[in-house]
Image (cartoon, rainbow, N blue to C red; front, side, top):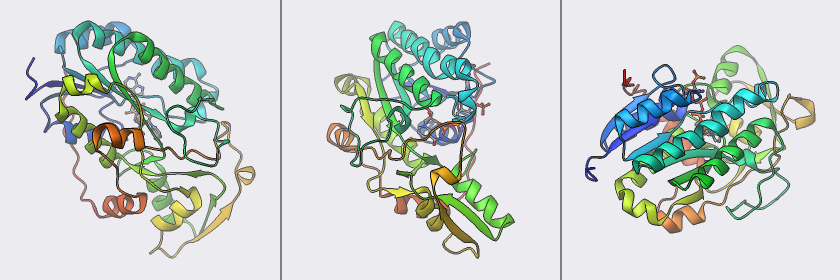
Length: 297
Ligand SMILES: NC(=O)c1ccc[n+]([C@@H]2O[C@H](COP(=O)([O-])OP(=O)(O)OC[C@H]3O[C@@H](n4cnc5c(N)ncnc54)[C@H](OP(=O)(O)O)[C@@H]3O)[C@@H](O)[C@H]2O)c1
């Protein structure tokens, strides 16, 4: 083991967060970045093979089933990827003495609160995706591995499928976009979450072992999807119209309030994400720089 230049195994490297992690973590040690083709985390034998061959000091799991609506019909698949697979990764982390960093979601909550959720608040998911992510958190906690589970919300960036890119695409096609205005939460830029993860890894495994557990990692403040859309499209000639959740029925119910209180994370690690508007401004200005994805095979 080399704490100054650890080996880091990244899963889900082709996802929106995974791509930013691949860029950020390549400066933290020897990165083995696996997209889905290189490592299907729902294949326990493949997970065991890759972890044992790589012998990492850190495993960063950005792989997930994130199709919130489809998860209602594909519950079993969502649980295989979001619940069972993190348990296997955690068991392998324990076996090889690695620290696992995993991501979860505000959708573990039912959204009935009106003030930010801290980590002690009892989760109560209201859709299959949220239930599968909660089961993943619990599998990791039960494993006994040294693990940090980072819950975040409304993730967006310059890659993949997310609200920012959807709004920009629709603005180019339509005169009016109708956006839900009664769901409250906080948008978080993939690059900021990846930067926070890199800062954690730089602290070293021994330090993280003292702080293992569950954390909320989100920007301060709060907004609605409607306000987020208006801010994204401020300089575009498109009309953004507020609608209610009832006007936009979806297969999966969404929590109407998902603001996460990140003060435990700030106290433990001295890391706080910038305000969501500042992150959005930086994201819109950021130069596209596709990070390398290095398959292990
Ligand atoms: N997106 C959000 O708004 C949001 C909000 C809160 C928390 N989170 C959490 O943040 C983390 C990162 O999410 P994200 O937004 O980056 O999602 P994403 O863009 O959908 O990325 C997930 C990646 O995982 C891959 N994947 C799916 N099944 C896999 C499997 N069996 N084995 C290996 N890779 C697999 C996907 O590949 P394919 O594309 O080929 O399926 C995709 O590249 C997740 O834990 C998610 O739950 C996300």
